[in-house]
Length: 331
Figure 1 (cartoon, one colour):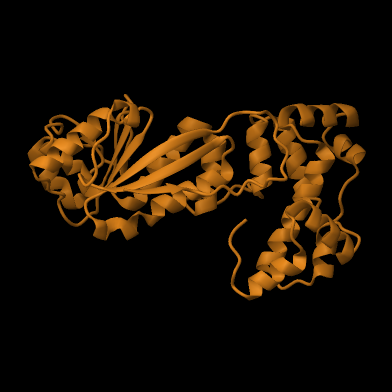
Figure 2: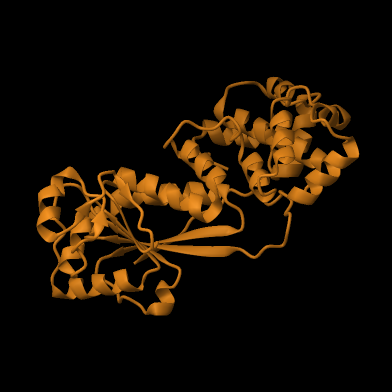
């Protein structure tokens, strides 16, 4: 079993609104064999992206080959998702040991997801009769034979939140994004879909910082408008009094509400949005540091460098040098 604790992109410099303990979520991806492990990379990419967007939650992924390791007991599977990673080409057949192992996992896990050919496992563990599932066309005849009821779409979510299915590995990502909506809200799910390319990104999903603060504010509309307005005015930063006037409130009320809802000051957020934009431009464009400083509201490249080092603990020159050396990873 391979254990992945996916990294989070949350900046250590970001202010924390509330001292909320981190909650871990565990997902076990079950493979038919070690040779299918490479295809599970898209699951790791999905949860890596989710970890970058969600606060106070971490998704920990275990990649395991069917029946290779012990099943573990009820405490292990409490609150845990089992994702059986089938394909769309071959029936997934089990020997007696694997049948027992699979049956126990399906019975114990809080949420089971069957992908592709994995839906046919239900017949082998005696769970297929009159069970609704998403079935790929390649397995339609086999599904009818074993008594499965086709959902008629690419994904099926069970009402009891126990036994779900996706007809393909790609549609499994759509299903997983629906669970993000259930667990964390539709705003975050929509943001994630845009971030990984499942849908067109929303205009409001401009930065990781904006996403985290909006989520932290529990979708407060004034916080959202303030963040959007600041994000639209990075080149020539607004005075807070002008920002408040644009939002139809007083400076004091806006500052107090923003601090109460996000745990960070309005001016601090504005500065961090500008620095985040500068970081993106350093990583993705050939603009000079003088041009980047102008594009993010700093008076000079020297002023940008000073603020950048204080926030990121590295310099714009270091980011550029790493980029040209091919050593950059996403922040």
